[in-house]
Length: 151
Image 1 (cartoon, rainbow, N blue to C red):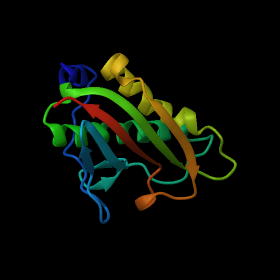
Image 2: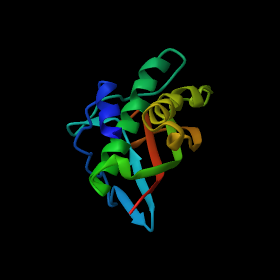
Image 3: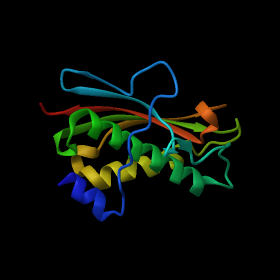
Image 4: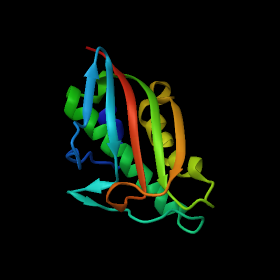
């Protein structure tokens, strides 16, 4: 059902990105998945790079949305079926921005809204949205997640 919902939104889950460092993309302990930070990668390339400002918020929102899609791709690879998700617990959103930029929540809302649209009440989550001076490979945004799944 969840994957049908994703397709109805015109989204095709990509192959999950491979780590850019010395870590694994997902750690499962009990019924929890800890998904490592996902940047806006597609086919091994970062799609959205640079600093976020008041002038490019809409592009940054597309970046955050792509990060969320990559989170979903990692979940699917780990558990095989997104219908096993029982709760999206937390998203942590990082925005590559200058110290003057203050609309981090507005950027990360694109990811939160997509997760809620896909999962409904199971997608309601806690969240942080913070600004940072740089992100891996110059990406605009990065998102990690904690997700509860059924066995």
